Length: 157
Image (cartoon, rainbow, N blue to C red; front, side, top):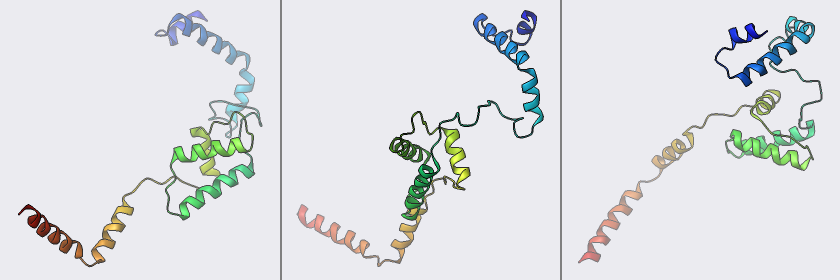
């Protein structure tokens, strides 16, 4: 075992090498289980495997509340960002007494996929819309500037 660890993990410290040695022994011990998991396409690409129900998740009701919040903001034209979604999810989790919920990046990715939502990239469309609207206005603002320059001249005399 020592030769294997030295061969594949030669750059690691002795403490890290010991950790890798223990990991290899765990793989040997769980060889049959790992083999079955690798043969199944559903579990072959998993990095970690947890039993069903171990993860801390929001209930369907809490997630629907969060979806409603996202849709309400979008209806009002407010873009929803990742941190905004995380903060709201943590608030809803606290309201529903879900202990240990973290609203991690992985949770957010799954939440968005489950509810067919996406966080859109920020655009400058809002500013462009304002500029287009200003062009349609009467250009009285130029007259206002002219009036201001005349009044400035009068004050200085």
